[in-house]
Amino acid sequence: MSEIPTTLTGKFITIDGPDYCGKGTQTRLLVSHLLDNEHDKKHKLTTVLATREPFNSPFGLQLRRLLATTTDPAAKANEFADLFIADRRVHLDNLILPSLNQGAIVVCDRYMYSTIAYQHAQGIPVRDLLTKQATFWIPDVSIIILPSVENIIKRKSAERNRPYEEVFEKSSEFTKNVRSNYTRMREWLPDHNIVMVDGDRTPQEIFNDIRTIVDKVVFGR
Image 1: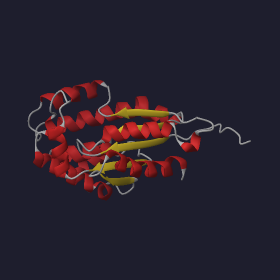
Image 2 (image 1 turned 120 degrees about the horizontal axis):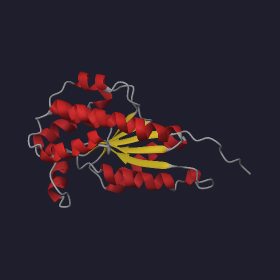
Image 3 (image 1 turned 180 degrees about the vertical axis):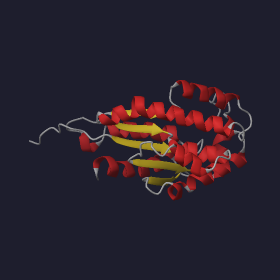
Image 4 (image 1 turned 135 degrees about the vertical axis):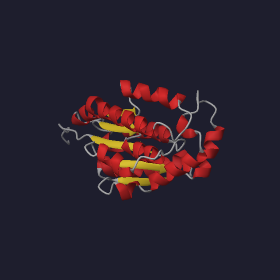
């Protein structure tokens, strides 16, 4: 009879990509998979925390209002960057790092890669965005879902449930620049374990790739 493990090692997984890439769907699928995975069926010790950014800090709430009321994607770049980074610092200190220290698997919908992709598209130099986030915790794996611009626009036009259109969704040219920035993320952050996943497939096909990637990181197989 095998002994029950006495310690758990926390893992930090982020899922990122342009708007309408399917991050929310993949986060939900991944959390369900991790809670009912074949590698922990016997002891059921896996704890999973699902979270997202912006967080519910005062900075995040301010961001939600700004995203809904700003009309020009090129406007208020520094304000957006400062708020996203301040919100992320609170998120890390108050929720993510304490959970990792307790052995949880943290799955986060958006992280620093969004700030780099979106705020660089707003005009802020990449070097500045990297410097401001240089002390942030590096995920064990960062998954970036990349649909084509055509599919992003198609999914946006088919979406009917969103209460309003956020500022960064208003311009197809801005969307193109954001996607292009994501494709360069491994170049800009060579010390991060960043994996690009083809987003031009069904949710299940995308998840099959994500599950394989995450299982290797979390369970070593």
